[in-house]
Image (cartoon, rainbow, N blue to C red; front, side):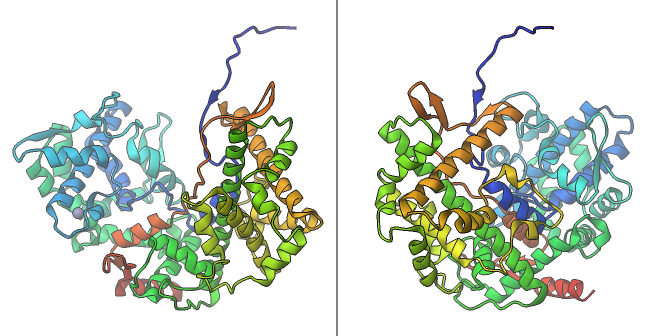
Length: 549
Ligand SMILES: [Zn+2]
């Protein structure tokens, strides 16, 4: 038998994401609703720019090495962002974000443009550098294209591919037509001359302003825009792998904006959209009536939000349980003991000990007082409870109370017609055994386990479930990635809390990006400040046509 002797190092602590694994089912649901857009693909202009750059580079540098490609790609991303930042500075439309918002490296490069005097030329490689210096625009070697956009451009739209040496390349079937469409609207030669000279002046940036993402809406870049509409809106279904689901969601967003008619909104448009899907009420208080496929798509977005609300409630309880254990320096031998101890200690005991005394009585109370789904202003409505669960200014006790009531309200709202994760995901199954706390399992547990419990036992059971799930999720991460994300550890004197305080975190369901795509493509226009954007007549025509076809 062979022995291997080595030093055993303790694993390194990492803050980590999703310590309870409650977000993964939500992510799986929204991913099926908006395939081909991700929460890091903020600007649709890169969907054209990526293939265009790869194609233009290949024409000009036939036998280039990967390192040369990377150098030029990085300079190209720097130049594009400089152009956007300059356009933001010189255009007085009051919306600088439409020009340079979310461009790769914009936080560094915006200052470069702002501080550049009229005659000074900017050296692109100074920012494109791979060296770890403050001026570097982006860390990832293959730039924002490699880190953010390549995944969808390769997998969903098949515009790009990769060689074994990791060089990014355009595809002949899809990438080349896209690149050619981009090239009809921009001065490719001038752009590449700047890259090769490694210098641009402010004048150059101004003369290249047609590259700014805001210009997608202009006639000049018509061909590129049309092809993007074909691919992303699914006008030509053969141009992507999952056009249907994406088209339905985008259609629903446009329907929502049309119905809301540019009304005032308290929250961001993507939040208002989610609430409207969930409650079928518009931000102006009017009902949003939907039928057919639109209603089904809204049901799915509403189901995503149900899962998200559960995730937030569970995270809040986890956070408060850890804070309580830490504060009291409790010596707890097991997770089960920790759940029991928490439920009988401040701040949980205030909620657990209040009337009614059993789970069944409490559930009956919640169900009989359940507000109408449309009545989002009611203090017992999920949307109101959500606000309290995430509000950091609330006392722990009222946040715990809101979280517990929210969980019960979500269960009470479930009926035979409600979605389940399995039904919502279709073939895109996820391994739910890795994510034990999810909307389906909570409904199941409420029926099988909780119904005979006293309220205090029920809260103890829920807390033990949360703490035990965290241990399971963290240990799996530890075995898979070597990252130690545990917040609860076993020491000589029992369990103790370690690491960062739990943040009650939202998932990012790609809606912000989808709304921005619509705007960049000229399908929405900004209304007054504090109001929702409005769809353009063209958006409505396009969607009507795509619906009819
Ligand atoms: Zn612009």
